[in-house]
Length: 231
Image (cartoon, rainbow, N blue to C red; front, side, top):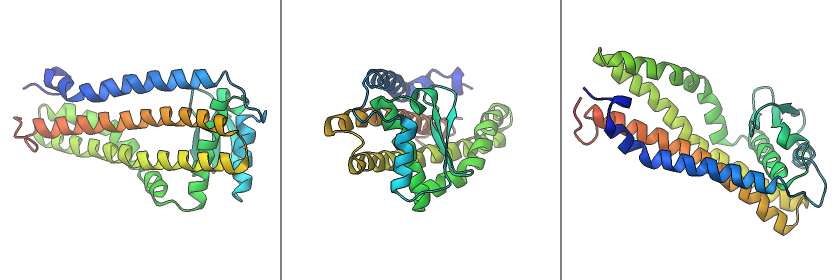
């Protein structure tokens, strides 16, 4: 039986997702690098811009911390921590301000009880478990059929998580763009350029969702659940 990485059909199914992932990575790196060389007129750093967004939205008790890794920026709703990478935290560039304000947008979502963010946060434990267990069960399922079905079922949890992430990230960028304009952080031209960074970054989430969805479709096809594929 051909399945997974043994099956040439796997790459046929995944080709659009892989192509989009390569483009998204290239686009994000290129756009971030371009506007990381352009300083904002306000002279604010990413950390200062995020702090101003939080203050203007009446958000208190959220710490702004440094974290390692390229574009590892994220908001952790558990400890109420907004973590910014070194390239964002102390930089005065348009890229840094855009990314920092995007992460602050997640804190605004948290304060307003944005439903999709709450749902994504609730799914994190299940997604962490399923991402580790699904491939193990799928490998075992090569020999014991019920484990294959269970593995694909767990994999589907990660797909749902990826799909839920899309509106969460898009909404955070939308909030960031509005907040940057309202606070006067950037000029109209600067705001458009910072928005380009956020749009490019969103492509990475879209690519991840498309790739995981196509992988699930492939599994379902091979199981005969979709399209009458053989087992």
